[in-house]
Amino acid sequence: MVWTHSYNPLDSTLLSTLVAMLPLVVLLGLMAVSGWSAKSSALVGLITSLGIAIGVLGMPVDAAMAAAGYGAAFGLFPIGWIIVGAMFLHSLSVEAGALEIMKRSVTSLSADHRVQALFIAFSFGAFLEGAAGFGAPVAISAALLVSAGFPALEAACLALIANTAPVAFGALGTPITTLARVTGLDEFAISSMAGRQLPFFSLIVPAWMVCTMAGRRGLMGVLPAVLVCGVSFAAVQGFMANFVGPSLVDVVGGVVSLVSLALFLRVWKPRECWRYGEGFSIRQETSTASLSNESRDSVRLVLWAWMPWVFLSLTVFAWGVPQVKAVLEGTRSLVLADREWTLPQKIVSPECAVPRLDGRVAKVPPATRQDRELERAVYRFNWLSAAGTGIMLSALVSVCWLGISWKRAAIIWCENIRRLSGPLITIGAMLALAFTTRYSGLDVTLGLAMTYSGSAYPFFAAMLGWLGVALTGSDTSSNAMFGSLQRVTAEQLGLNPLLICTANSTGGVMGKMIDAQSIVVSATATGEHGQEGVILRRVFPHSVALMFLMGILVWLQAGVLDWMVPPFESATSANAPKP
Image 1 (tube, one colour):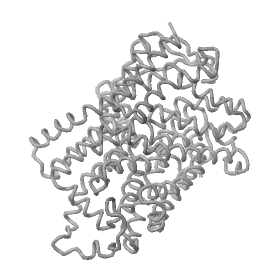
Image 2 (tube, rainbow, N blue to C red; image 1 turned 120 degrees about the vertical axis):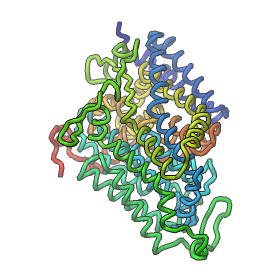
Image 3 (cartoon, helix red, strand yellow; image 1 turned 60 degrees about the vertical axis):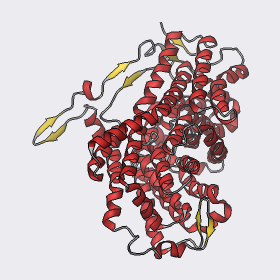
Image 4 (cartoon, rainbow, N blue to C red; image 1 turned 90 degrees about the vertical axis):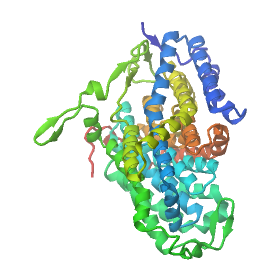
């Protein structure tokens, strides 16, 4: 028997919306206000969502429990798998002493923490977002910042703030591709529209991050570096999104930004050096130049130390290429020595319909353009093509490269799993809450409340995307969840569906820094598990402010800046011209 969503179960829009907000309010409130641990907050939030889904909405008990179990499984794999691999590689680098050499090599570019944050959190983080996404950039960037001498909490917050503007084009453009599939709009047109919104924020976010660290004076002291970092990425982001497509936007933009900043630092240094715990000091020019020959690491040694992270970059990029992913999932053959080789799909990417949930829940208008749309729930254990497996492969290669014995590597692996057991349980609970919210329809109830804003809806379209990412922890999931609703609402209000649907993704990126999953990942990567509430309180105002600015931009593009929106006719064409 199919259970149908009810988006106004209490026959009152206000009351139904307030009830739908409870799981999110409980989760964030307990973490940020009451000081509860993320694990306890997530468990209470999950219980709350299950109680509302079953007791208020009338969702069958077995379907609700299946949704929670599906979410927990998804939290452990593939998301938890990424964290396990990234932290294992980090631990190997620490064991071999490579991380200290990396730290000195970054300092040789600039001892200034502001510049290091630009290099690691924004530029390198953007590359990782484009190649892998799904928590990898936050985990890796935060860990590297700590290794460079940043306080752990600051490193976690900076990695979250930096991981915003690139997110819509993350994982080789997966959020944009998903949005196109859900809404029926042309993928290239959505990419173009996003490329006319996000570059503005690619200019803002590096400056915002530095200002958060060192204030206005600190920002002005490294403004040239901020501009080189932001402008190089924004220019490539806008060009690639409008003239190439969504797949390589972040990868190319991140590389260009990294190279541009590194070359610029060869000819320019900030007048004052700023470091956490030390403040400003006029010692930048001598901080690297005065190093004795004995204290300088050779180029060969620096390359040795960085190679594990080069391995990681190469594997996560390769694992993200659609053709490679298809081979690893057994859906495409690989030709070697004039023979076709195909991996057995049932072994490398087994699928399982979630019992009691798959096909038992149905969306209805206005959440869908169909009369009734059955929700699929199929769990894929694509262990070979998962991004975490690529990271794990780079870690195994690094064991040999770093000269660590396999026995010692096994001990490090076990210690890594033991240390991450708490965070993995937390992530599982977070995703269980998110999936319960999604399959019960509570997310749509919250979204529908924003559709009553009328002419102000373009602003709230971005806010809805922000809410979706805060709930699910993924811009891709937010687009899958709210994309159809955004198009239906746009058509009912006489707004441009391309602008409104794209706003779901571009507004959603600002919610990435406050979603519980990302916060747990950042806390875990910096060794600050248990401090998730502190991190949330630190980054929440930044998330709201950036979301507000995106909402204003979308609202202006629906009015006086409508010339920035690509023609809707090309958006609906399956064969939109691609320059």
